[in-house]
Length: 292
Image (cartoon, rainbow, N blue to C red; front, side, top):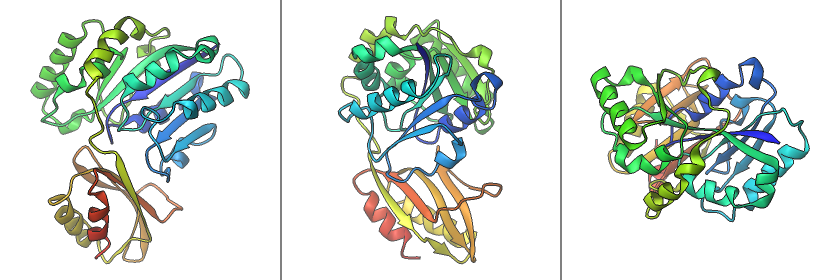
């Protein structure tokens, strides 16, 4: 039977970075990752390296569920029993819906046990943790990530609220999603909270459930790109953006997450595509960005 580690959380919170860090540990260096991307273009797959099963172009929480079980079955058949399997959901996913689909599946219970459910929260100053109650309830570990972006007293209040919602959940404050494997549970307690989490999540929907892909985006300078993006952002809600933009003839990796736009100078990228995730007006945002 395989141990399954689930990483979930909002767009740009740091899930992929957390998994990348975990796979750098000896115990997880041969682990298998099942990564779900809402967009059909998976920009982060190269970041995670080998042994990655990619489910792109849909969200497993609101699809048939067959795609996830197919990937889980394939991982089970091609690895040994001691190989950890890591699932990363999309930032738009309702984790409770994902759990309902797999837990009731007899194939899943014969092949997998959930070792740990990790909720990665990208810190901001205006988080509504009450709205995250269902996700907190089915988590064994909560990472309050990007602690350098928020004042300590605000993080203190967040941690207190999380413990109010679920007393026995472990909460860690992190930068770049770094944590010790000793903080992972090896037998999840989420089953005991699933019924309550389901009732909390009944009305949950996706805030950002549409995406567009831009290919060959070009700007003369970083300032020109940043100004254009901020202008578009003031008119259209964008949940996440990541990928390539050509700046003055040089391809650069840019990311918008947790309300912050950043360039990764160290990251090499072969693709010339940019993924933009938003609501039903995201196509208009993309049209405006391309008018540079």
